[in-house]
Image 1 (spheres, rainbow over the protein chains, first blue to last red):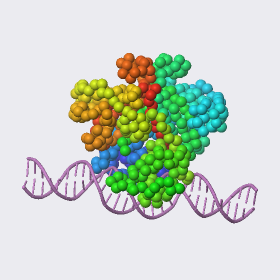
Image 2 (cartoon, protein in one colour):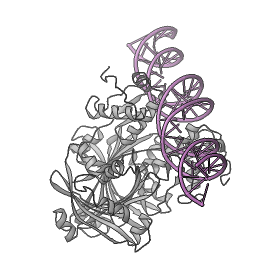
Image 3 (cartoon, rainbow over the protein chains, first blue to last red):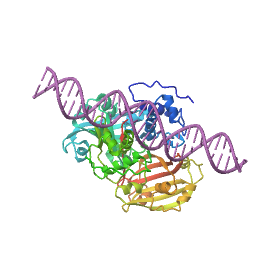
Image 4 (cartoon, chains in turn cyan, orange, green, blue):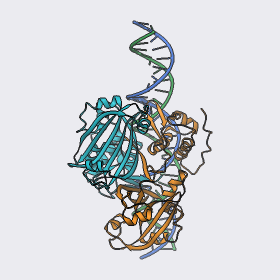
Length: 249
Length: 249
DNA sequence: AGTCATAACCTGTCATAACAGGTTGGCCGC
DNA sequence: GCGGCCAACCTGTTATGACAGGTTATGACT
C-alpha cells in the first residue's frame, strides 16, 4: 500500500516533473509490475500533497511516454516495459543519454570535423544561404564496444566552431548544448527511412554492403525555434531499433 | 487579426478538441503560415469563450502533434508543415486514414485470410496460449495505384472471424473496430526496424530482392489494454517513410 | 544618444472546485 | 440463488484564480 516512501520533493523543479520522475523510477525499479494498477489520482494527490491537475500533468507525460495507460472509470495501469537496446521516441534525447539509462555504455569516435559548403537541403534545414559554410561532423557511435551508427551532422558555422573545442567523443552534443551553452532544446523533426549500406558505410559500421540500415534525418531546434543541427543518422538494423507508443485521439 | 470566424462550437464534443480541430484546420488551410505567431492564450480564451486550461489543453495536443511550438515569454508559433507521402507517428491512425488526409488514395488487396497456430511471439503479444489458433490476414497496400507495403496481421480468433466478413479491401481495420464494433482504440506499441527484401516479399511489393524495407512490429490495444492485433508491416523504403516530432522535457 | 529600469505581455506552474460518464461491487428484492 | 438497482470509485472535462519567470518595448535618467 505505502510502497512509495514520501518523497522529499526538492524545490527548484516543477512539482509535476518531480512526481513524474518518482513514478517513472517506481515503475522502472519494478515496484509496480506489468498491468499493475497505479494509485488513483485521488490517492496520488494526498500522497504527494498536490492538486489533481499536477498529478494529471505527470500521468499524462508518462502515458505519452508509453510507460502507462489509463482506462476511464477503472484507473491507471502500468504498461509492459521494454528493456531491449532500443531508443524510445517519446522524448528527445541523445544516444548516449538514452543508452546509459538502459544500462548500456555508449561512446563515439570522431571521423571528421571540418567546415564545408552547405547544399540546398542543409541550407534549408539550418536556415542559412546555400553555399555558405557550415560545420560537418562525422561520428561513429559505439554501443557496448560495437559500432552501431554513423552520424553525419551539420551545424551553423559559429556553433560548429565552438563545438570543435569540446569533448565530442565522450559526451552527447545535446548535453553540451543544454548544460555548457545554456541553450534549451525545443524539439526535433524526424523522418525515418530505410536504406542499404554502400561499401563505404558498411566498412565504417563493420557490416556488409547491402545490409539494411535504419536511416533517420533529424532537424533539432532550440526552444525558440532556431535550428541547431541537421543530422543524417545511419543505424545498423541488426543492432538497433526505435520504439514508441502512439495514442489514439 | 480576426481571421477566424467565431466558431459554432458544436456541443457533444469536448471543447478542447473542438478548439484543437479548429486551430488545426486554420493551420492546414494556410490561414496561418510557417512561423506565424498564433493568438496568445489570453486572446484564444476570449475568442472561444473558454478558460485558459482548455486552451492550453488544445495547444498541448497540437504541439505534441508537431503542428506548432511554444516559446516561454514570446508565444505560440506555427511549425514548418510536411506534406510528403509520409505517415505521422503523432497519432494512432490507419494507413488509408492517414493517406487520404494528405490527398492520396489508398486501397488494399487481401492476399490471405486464414486461421493459423500462434507462435510464441504472436501468443505473447495477443495474450493467448502458444499454439492456439489465431487469424492471419496478409494484405498488400497500395498508394496511388502502386504497392507500398505488405501487412501481415494476427488477430484473436473470434475477432478475426468477425473481420473476415467485412470489406477489408476498402476500409481501414481501425475504422471498422471503432465505428462498427464500437471498440475504442487505446494505443499501439511500435518497434521500427530496417531489413532487406527477400525474393517473396520483393515479388509482392514489386521491388528487387535486396532492396531496403522499413519494417514495423506493432501491437495495437483497445482502450482497456486488451490486445487487438499484432502487425508485421514491411514498407518499400523508396515510397514511404515515417515522420514525427519529438519534444525535449 | 546611450543605457538602464520598468511596465506590459506571454507562457509555465499550481491550487481549488465541480459535474459528467464509465466501472464495479454490494445490497435488496424477487 | 439470481438479477437488477444503486452507491462508491475513477477518469474526463472545464472554470477560476494566482504567482513566477522570460521577453519586449517604452520611457526615464545619465
